Image 1 (cartoon, rainbow, N blue to C red):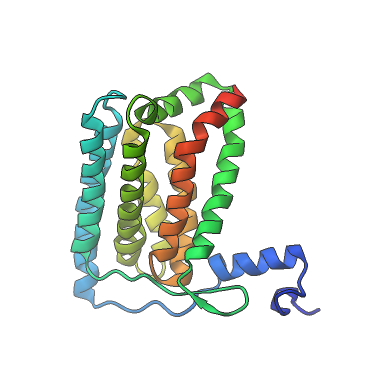
Image 2 (tube, rainbow, N blue to C red):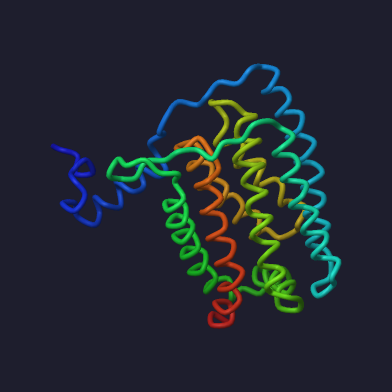
Length: 250
């Protein structure tokens, strides 16, 4: 039986189009990973280990600051600086190259935007349930209070900078440090672990979901451009839409 995802674009049904999109954006690597010298891999691992430890503690400290306190802005920017510095210190980073479902070359940015929007939709749907469970909603409201009680636009800028820095580090440096066998699982696990000191279980769950999605993009494209697009779409959408959805759900 022929694979309908190989049919020309425009002749596929909606299900086949969706399958072709996921295969192109998450499942079929564009090329083989470029090997790195042992010395470069060791350097990445040392830098990654130190940066994850310090960054996780710094993230927990930033989220512990009282909402509305201007110190939060500097602390959050400092966390982004740690991720970015760790990424650059680890060695070369790549933007990557993707392939559309029709076979055309791309950077994977549009695919990242679509995937980020899909993940955002799932999380907003789940927010309607969380809104009715006080023990789950309270920690989320505390995080959102940094935007509600402060400047939402400053928080938005920090969200963008931090999102880019996290992708450069976790899908750039960390992913490359693990090597081909454990790169996807290892980078996702460390990204998830970096949120443990936040004390917010749902933030850790979100990191696991977002980390797995962007790591799959990294495996397909070999770079960070697509993951950055997905991360920013999801994180900015959560910043501006999660609060209203929780209000509606409650």
